[in-house]
Amino acid sequence: MKLFQSVTAVALAAALGLSGCVTNPHTGQSQVSKTAAYGVGAAVTCGIIGAITHGSKGARNSAAACGAVGAGVGGYMDYQEKKLRESLANTGVEVAREGNQIKLTMPENVTFATGRYDLSPQAQMSLDRAAQTLAMYTDTTLSIIGHTDSTGNDEINNPLSHNRANAVAQYLNSRGVAANRLSVAGRGSYQPIASNATPEGRAQNRRVEILINPKT
Image 1: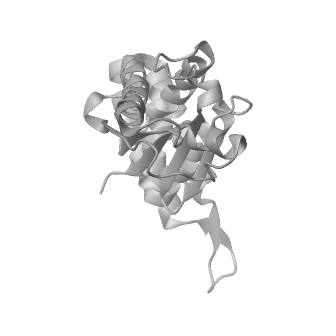
Image 2: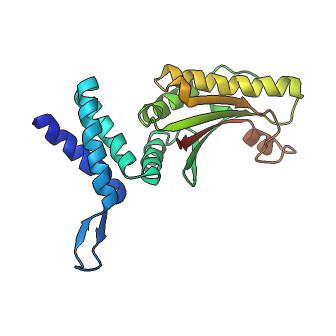
Image 3: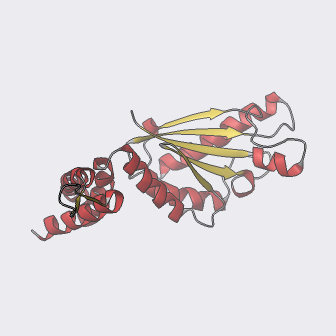
């Protein structure tokens, strides 16, 4: 009974936090929205499953994640974005949102040494934090894409960008993000986000992007 009450409390917090209340146009009274109600049902169910497989912590995590599922795709991605922004604050990793896609941008200066694809300690710390959320919200796929500036030629830039993206994917997998959710690509210098004519622009172009998309 205690476990059920605990799971229900987490479910309510997750679903209501995402969806809130709405005003009934006929009575003028505030009530739980349908989206929140669906979120509670999903969260309670998943929280019980999480408790069976992973104990009380599993119940809390599963209830929160599945409450977001019940709130719909937008709510699911909203909650994940919020968690990522909190965990990645002050790491140098940029979190951006466009529609239902979340993009994490890891600049080279906090990720790799020049010309290398072994992850820096700072990058590993950032990925550790991100993985805690990414591993929990399993109804997403992650496209990991490496980019370089235009210095050098394709024979250098293309494999370097791919190897950097692959290093990020392998690290996330080692921290609990399922391999079947991950895809890797290297785009070399072909998708710049700034001018390659200046050192500042080239620094922006040297990056790894993690695109987080809801499963269709």
